Image (cartoon, rainbow, N blue to C red):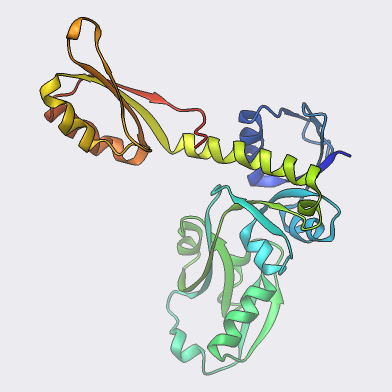
Length: 283
């Protein structure tokens, strides 16, 4: 039996397809075909709006898929979060007009607008606010001040909120793309193995993106200090250079630390430093 995998339409799709491609799973479609072809004969793919994916995976219509954790939480979907892919990170926030006072607003009945009914209502209930909820279908930030007192929306940078003269009064949750699976599918050995094997390669790719391989040469007198400086996964690899001309040292280090690390390595005596991309890290 094939593994039914559902992919998200919209902004999340390109990064998911890129990740699958790096796994060796090619996805081919013309943009209008919601059942794209796949190079893996064990997979059956379908495209759906990301908002529909958590519930359909929960119901067992698909074995696995990709969805934002915001929609998993909004739908209280009973799925297994196999892996946080950390793609398309956003914050789910409550926002009001920039010239409003939140503490004063809470004393009266509000009109609250959002695509996230459950998250919005839970927040306002916790705040003890009386409100009427109105569901939006996109462009939520345009409602205040004429048509809403408060909105709950997702934001990556906050720029759209600022441009619409809104300010954040609370962050309800952080969200990113998740690789999720149906619970019953994960109890089937064959489906579980396929899903976990895909997740393993996903994880190795994401770990590879977060690290680079640093290679360098050094004299014996510098070796100990260099090894201490390198934040390797276990320990740096060290090998003697031909003709006893020193040592070659290499380590997979966090990408974000390279800009500060390289000057320290140079000062400690490292020469011929190379920085190389890593495709996958399988620990």
